[in-house]
Image 1 (cartoon, rainbow, N blue to C red):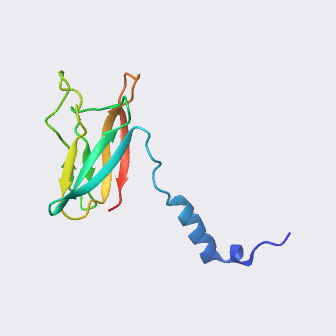
Image 2 (tube, rainbow, N blue to C red; image 1 turned 90 degrees about the horizontal axis):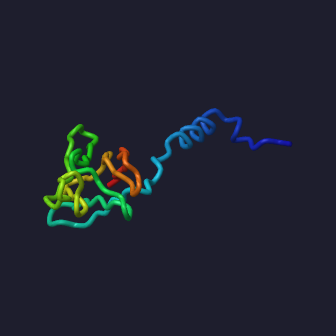
Length: 121
């Protein structure tokens, strides 16, 4: 069986390997990132999956490429102040690229999970 000629070319093979290693993090079933225009900025909203709760004691954060950390928040919390009663939001001026980290407690589980979402824009 004859192999394709491009597989023997080191540059093509390297590009193929790098493309395979550069995959985006998998989508999380626990959290969805919504965005909408907000004046001169972009409003980011973290929406938990049905039954899941976002931990309010460890506020979700957008970690930007320049090292700046911006926190999501909302004043509406559960009676024990442990979870957000409504999805937390963050208004960002300029690019919203970065990594979002949040502590999410899935329905039926007693331990929260750290969820990582990549924001590309």
